[in-house]
Image (cartoon, rainbow, N blue to C red):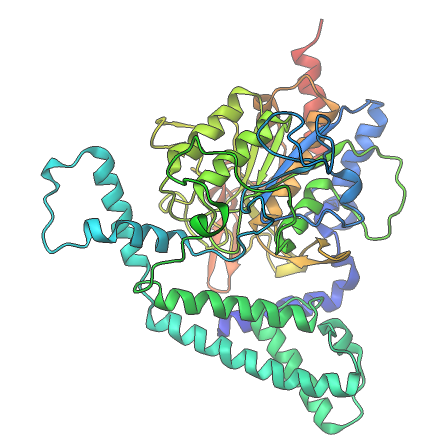
Length: 543
């Protein structure tokens, strides 16, 4: 906790220096703006100067839901050309009724939706508990599949334990939540604003001493919890309640099997992959915060003022709801990938991951199906500070089934900037130069949120769609290039430290080299990507 408080203090100081310029820093340019963004505006100018006419390009966003009414996302939504909206018919005969903008694999025809789901380790543990929790096991007769399943169950059994440290963290957050409620009541009474943001409170001049003291305590609490200044009071309470609820479920998960939400809501035969036609067309779902933020980045939202631009944005966003509040199900992910491929997406963004994948063959097969159809997949590395050279996170480019590495998949870690977090690296991003290919901004990233809002989020979940946007520009303006071509171009289009032996801090007590973090040892640069794409296409298709 001390490290967190010190980190937040340093971050807050940098915010005072940089102020409102922190919004959209991820699109900016090092030479012009002095910040390690991806140079998007420079890339747009290069494309304009080339006088190329883009072809429409579809990015499929596999996530937890997208607010289709957001004013900056709505105009860029993919429209299924073969589907007549609202007639309750499967006009294109693809098995999905009225799939105008995509599909929701977490619902049913009656409009019900899975919202909160358990983590995968709980599902794995209880699924095989009766089989493997025995005093004596005779593994001599087991085939390879059962041995692998037992190994997975053992890992789940080890990780499902709720430790004393977990209990202490939960207790701390509960106390913090109660304190926030009490302080909020005092502040709201005087401010007459039931949903004030931390930014607004910072500029508010209290009338009474009690309110003045409460203001100081509230701001210090927000810093200690690492909560963004733009977050509103109600959203903070929602996030704290969500964290507490998740941890309370973890505390009893070893004794209490998770609810069978497939039986209750989706009504599919989960073990049967051929049972594919379930869900509904509500791609927003009950909680679209994460997916809306990701979609805004994939779409390339560069301001909140609706300024007209001469640059032609060729991107269309297809929504596939496959991630609940909790761990995603492998079947939904695999079907989401296949839906995206079959309906014309050329980029698939997957900002999610988990440590267990019991139906990994389904997902691996879908990823390789996408490769066969010339579709590029961008996947976030994850936010647990894991060394992915050692610890597996899924979906993974490596397949135990196919015994290969997916040729059409890029795994993205999160970068930052010294003005944002005192370093070019982040303290949360998973890393490992055998799995993570390159880095992309993922700290304090500003994008769209539901209900016409905008805000900051952290994570490799943000890094991936920034890269997806750049990849989509290449595919739109250089349509002759294949997914393999685009992947190769992206991997060679990174900003890198002049000295690769330089150590960069990822926390107050640990530093790493860029080429230990990722295979390419650099941060994606959109302008360099466009330059390399133009040269690549010229050389490949020269007469």
